[in-house]
Amino acid sequence: MTVVEAGTKDGLLEEVMHEEGLDTDAPRIDLKVTSGHINSDLTIGSDVTAAKSLRANDDLSSNGMMLAGAGFIVTPAEAGHLGLGARAGLEKHIRDYRNGRDLMSRSRGVMVIDLFGLTSEEVRTKFPEVYQHVSVTVKPERDLNRREGFKQNWWRFGEPRKLFRSFSEGLRRYIATVETTKHRVFQFLDIGILPDHMLIAVGSEDAVDLGILSSRIHTVWALRAGGWLGVGNDPRYSKSRCFDTFPFPDANNIQKQTIRVIAEDLDAHRKRVLAEHPHLTLTGLYNVLEMLRGGTKPGELDERDRRIFDDGLVLIVKELHDKLDVAVAESYAWPVGLSDDEILARLVALNKQRSEEERRGLVRWLRPDYQIPRFSKGVDKQGAKEQGAQVAAELIAAVEQKPSFPTGAVEQTAAVFGALAAAGGPLDARGLAAQFKRTKTTEKKVGEVLASLARLGYVISDDGKAFALRRVA
Image (cartoon, rainbow, N blue to C red):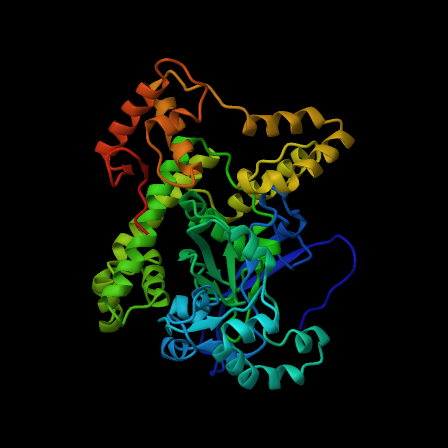
């Protein structure tokens, strides 16, 4: 039972930390008592509920598809009977499908019929087997639905998620997490996979974003901002409260590349051990990881958990997460060992700072190539109102104008990392040099940096000429 009183009040927060002997006459309940200002979400300390959505994160996260019809889901064998592999173009409309259990446990390997963008007549003409299947398995259910739009567009998903389709266009992969789950885990999904509505998709294929979202700093924020839900009281990731408000670090290219490498290794390692050992799940891996973080030694694990530890190489998962936490903290220029309350206080303050910057027209876009064409005009007008139009204009111009290639070795490396990260595919020295103001030596210098990075394994090439950042996931 919760009793509340209107107004701004100080109070005590008492959290149960340990219970024993509850069925006896002398039960023991250990409480953690915290005093201070009571926030609207019944927490004490930094008021995460006061954080505002940031324009820098606009239109880059979305729930997955809400089908409103179980008949859309088919097995690969059923997809074959419906014409997949025989009907031209059907591969665009029958795609792999994943929900939360697929990601955190073991994948069912199912597919989904996605007829977005097609009229019913086009479906009947181009894919008659699919039309009949959906007519039989989906339409009767939709005819009983109270929402008129669901009845009229019975062959389409209930919520087709146009935003997801927009930010995922042209990407090779995207980031996903389960909305409500025991452990907050982010991972890459291939662009050919459609997400279920209980997944949150983030429109980025850059491993630096995967690394930041997977870090302790973001996890602490998500746990406080998102709340808990369900029978197991599992943490819930609300995109509007957890992602839209989160202030990403203003990292330089060297810091970004450090995070990228660790995040790629983490994602690839988890996928590899899951593929090699059918008994493993992400939930199982992170259950054991939490035990290790809590001080449990490998020799103290029971037989089942020790098998997960050994086959899943969980110590490597822990080491990669630890490295990621250090790298992300450094990208914020924060100490590594901050407490949860200190992290929240700094993030709330940073959110406020970024909100004030954005009111003046300065927006630190996460995906400027995608976001600026969509939002820059609005930012310019907003900046003008706050007499900050020049700031907005300079930010946009910085994206449009080519920078000079740096003279220092570290800066040159950072510039090449940044250019490769922004590129849509592999580039050779000439293509990379074209990203900068040209001089007689630019292409030669870029080629020398590429050769050094290739020797160190940071970039890869299929032909020895065009290079891309190493991606292992």
